[in-house]
Image (cartoon, protein in one colour):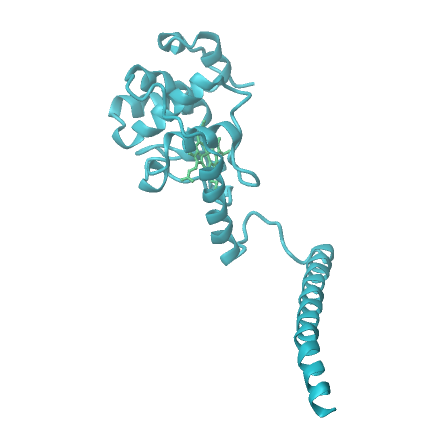
Length: 211
Ligand code: HEC
């Protein structure tokens, strides 16, 4: 009699433990969702661009890099060996990127100081170690919930690849090129006569004509 009841208990016990474990896990999970919703609905978490989410910021940065690596095309820049693409990418970088990212020896615009996360220096090793495909993907799609815009609708793929060429060239920027990039600061509303030199005609003009 005794033996039978012991055998029965030892068969039942593990199941009970398992059921208890899963109920606990589900309760904890449900509680977490409820707490998250209550905290979000209360509004106490500030969305100010001036604050920091502490370790969450580094975590989001990490997740963002992993996501870019996952989604980026594996192809290399079709213009990688074409030195002309650097000169062709320059006016686009001047019109659309300098304001936030600056360039070696050239400060970004004031808008960049208010961005969180801050726009990185694209000539630094952190960006330069990204693959051509990753740079192309970021320029094409932007980065959600940061100031980084998507340029897919602004420029055709070949232009975006030429911008990649120019970003790759940033660490070796010449004083003449720096001068050309800096021109955008003084030319508000003025006529351009040199945009066509780079073969971009109307597109180049349209992009740095201020409304
Ligand atoms: C309105 C501001 C703004 C403009 C304009 C802008 N960017 Fe960005 N960009 C950002 C911000 C902010 C980040 C950082 C996002 C982050 O931390 O995830 C960023 C990130 C990037 C990155 C990823 C770099 C890295 O190391 O993770 C690349 C590449 C990049 N931008 C290229 C460009 C290029 C090229 C242009 C012009 C075609 C451009 N950006 C225009 C704000 C801008």
